[in-house]
Length: 284
Image (cartoon, rainbow, N blue to C red):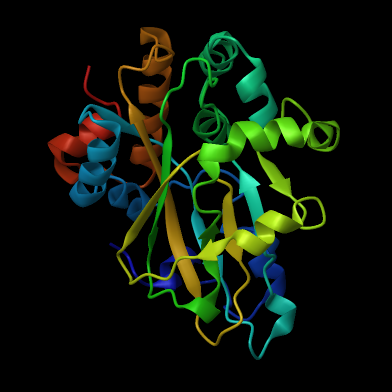
């Protein structure tokens, strides 16, 4: 896997240029790329066999597709506090509609409207876990691309939160008036959920280590307080035979991915493994 942050920014971009840095993505959140990223290295990382094995073990199927997300990059701020990223907790789903919906018709409609012409379509795909009544298991993950220690900030979560999500959602119904019933990404302010910010735990790990979690778990990132950068790549894999993956949607998705591969000179038959071609949904 790529472990050099230098590849995130073209060589022609000055590393000390704040103006250029702000153009790389959601810098306050530590996200490289406003939506999905399609560099050669990030694409090749998505076919990593060990990562597929981890998702397959949890989802209990090897027939998976990989989503196309982004990098996370927290610059060192110990000597440059102006570079600080925000500490946050969020859900990549809407907890209120998750329990109110009685079937997955909303999920089916949203996913089958995707044309994969916009980079944001891949984030929409990521954030549609269906409803509790159906109870699909959705798993997210990341791989740290450098050692991530306590003071480096980075990934944290509220342990076991998925077991109490229904109770929490019921008890915090008023928050749906603030965050909305239809938002599929909900970043919660500490003032609204102070008890969860107090309960969240940071997970330190070595470079190349993967962290996987149930999508229903409240999670996010802590700000970096060290002299070291924190950077990671985000992943999600899901069952290729999902009911919402109609032949028409699968073909639109396949054509969009082939076009992206061509832009970065990736030949699917040469540069992707047989498993990689399946993960990308290229096999008919």
